[in-house]
Image (cartoon, rainbow, N blue to C red; front, side, top):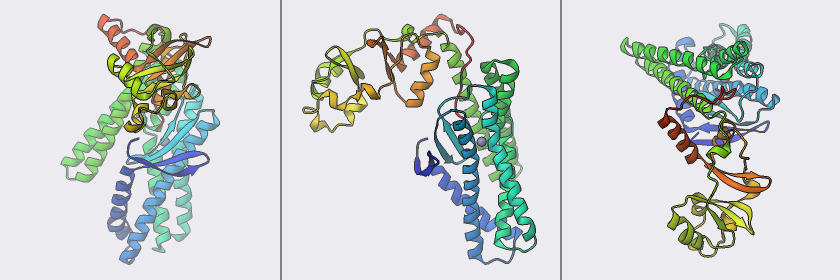
Length: 387
Ligand SMILES: [Zn+2]
């Protein structure tokens, strides 16, 4: 997510915070210190309201983090690698690199998040019971956490994809029909309907005088809508690409350059004259690496005459290579996950071509132009990240 920075690591999982989170932390502290706590617990000092407001807001984010950690731990236990957790304006998101392989795994992964929130809410509620009526800051904080965590759990159980409840719904349809793309289409459709309900509800609140609540709910609806739409686009793309192999789309005559020439020579004699954006680097007829425009940009211009291509390239051992028989629908998430634009295609140790994102886009456009939009076979494949 753009505008995020790392605050630490928990059990090997990177925890990132998006700048939008800080805005919400400030707004939340202000509204707690000037609204919620003074109304429910009159008689505290102004300083107490602010300190309690800030502590409560921070603890709410700790609760969101625990919710996300629950998703991540279950995912990891089920063999799905977790990249990181990002806290942002609407809560948190766990970036899980692969999709669940079965409806059962997806169900557990999705359900454990709201379950964690509901449990935290219940524990906080029980802890504040003996303090009831004491009008103490501790009572105030615990009661606030009880209310917000229960709301968080319930909100996430709304069956609108990509909310956890949407994932639960997805896993149930998947289990019943045995068809994952069908499940995604249905779950994203329900997600879009719910998103529109939020948007219209927000507009209605806005015009009936609840201006801030209206804007907030409208924004959540808009966020849900775009997330559901992108999940839907992805499943359509997956099914358009299923049954198509890397060999059908790759460029069998990729541009190659020698490893020992300087970057300056590479630019003057290869990249500029041929309009290249990348080239495969060869050393004695063997693939040694890949060099792209961005690798060149990382080297200061005044050193271009002295740095050989072999020093600036991505070496073979850091490259992911694919085989011509692999399905595009398997390779695409790999490209997206690693944010790479081209992959060398290798068979029996020999370079046979290169697969680029541009070529995939062109292939899809030609198919669309010819009106052959129907998938070759139904895909049992995936969609995007867990919320
Ligand atoms: Zn969740």
